[in-house]
Length: 273
Image (cartoon, rainbow, N blue to C red):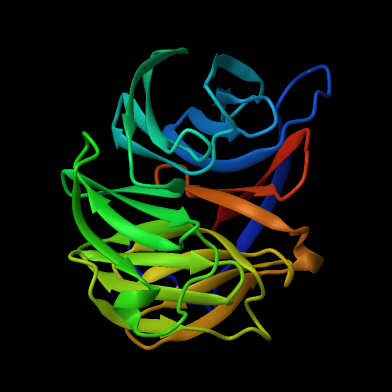
């Protein structure tokens, strides 16, 4: 996808996407695009993973997982990796058309929160102690970065992780920072602008040099350009953004999906013009 100009960007708000016809509320902590017609979501309070129709709304399929799930990513077109904090593991979930089935659970080295794909490996974030690790898809540890590695308290609550090329980006809710690491978890840079991006949550890679980050207390979606360190708010409270927790972008339909950091009955949608 070509670079987005933060000055001239136009995002047109679409009708919200209902999660159920009954108005049932869900506590969603992360979300990924499975295809042009499906979204996969982690339902913390219900200990579940949900498959949702991204055009009409409604839950197509759901599976129960051992504990409240947090971050997630697509490992390939038909399989997702889901973080299980309490169980200190990664649950694989298979997508078969409109049906979800559980795969194996792989143990990892801590209270895992964020998970993403890094080549043929996974990169995960932990709380207690705060750290980032690169592991194999079977959970074998390859690289680790923590506050001891940094020589300072860089992380407190590293909740979400994004991957762009061979770089890893971690959003830390407590320190108001985005940390950029190499694929071997060497520190490259940190970005922070608390007056603009306050309590960063979900983070996704839009293209090679642009990321989108949820500002939970700043009530905005911020565009970050790592090459320059520039941050720009592309959606704000006046645009209907309130306490954003997680987001996903469908390149095919050029649609941005946003869920709030509290129980909700629907997902916000914006079309990139």
